[in-house]
Image (tube, rainbow, N blue to C red; front, side, top):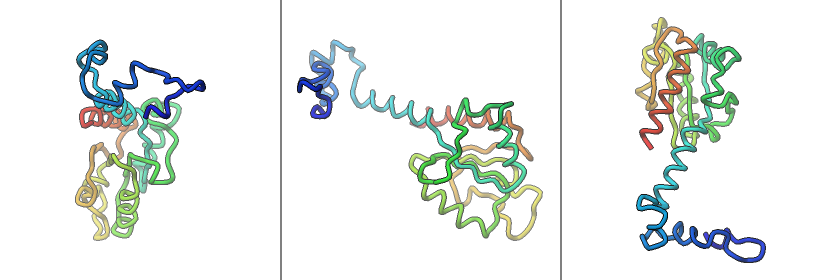
Length: 181
């Protein structure tokens, strides 16, 4: 690590801090910074901050719940204050899957493939009654509980859920991520 942190003259940039980062052992220099400083906990805090503040969503909308999600992203509610409004097209770049609307048996393999391609750690929000219990649709091709196939982190109830409850659900998920990591 110290080979990357050298100035143009070849001198180490932070000569007192670098040995503390490279080794997690306690010595006189590390005790001067405080007894609670450890490189592992410092990097864990950075990872926690990055995971909670850089959520990139990938919505999959099949019915009216997706319109409520779109209105939550609009100028009236401005959900991009909490998660980016830029929606990911590639599942390998997203870590939040937002499922809204009824999922049919024909769509399920594609949804599972998208979920497997997402980066870890990954979270899933289920919007509305259709995703959690089938909603008003009672056909044989409707998946009545998506939780049998994908681990759902947060259910947002309603038919369709209001934009305020979607934003509140996203904030609840961010708090859950902070508590998990």
